[in-house]
Length: 253
Image (cartoon, rainbow, N blue to C red; front, side, top):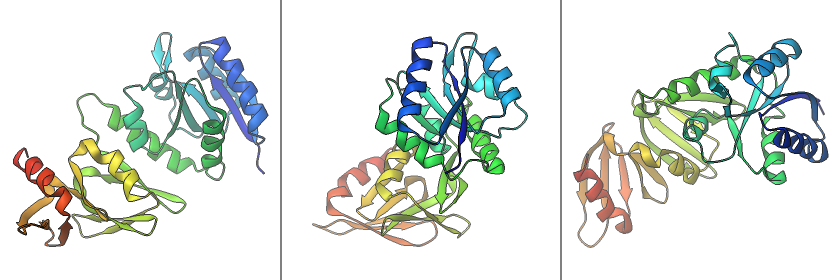
């Protein structure tokens, strides 16, 4: 098992020490090589020691984690954000396929986060793509623009506005895009439903999630659900249970 050289960044000493002890106890691949208590000491430690992973508290004195990361020309280390509350940036972090843990840190969540990245350490090109997507999604003048779709060992960043629909297929999800491409994501449809709920997507059937902005026509069936025709002329079944909600949401588009 490859050793993951790790730096912990948190302005609270108790939080740094607690995370270090927890990581050493439950994550055998983690090697804590430094701890930093500010943006300055974090920048110096990361620049000098070149870690594989940084546990990074979002809020710090005189700035935040994103201010720190923008100081680097390239991101060549994995990041697991830590925060004491449901930070405004969590949504952007999720869309960018970067991990985070809420404080107080639960050992099981820590282990799961470390396990998820063990096989990804060192994928420099992908790290920079994920961070670029995160910064784009964080801009206050922008809505979330891109979502990371994990394909096997890789990640594709897809413009949300390009997604027509998403279909459940076993434990995977098949995205249909406006340029007629199809992308298979490794998350379940329920996971994408949760992620895209505020982006004008709706689960109209147990096997289909659609972009309401790309509906061409809705054909109702009396006493039943109906069929949605999307802009690519594909047809999606609408369940009876979803019918009224769909009509209401379409009237507000």
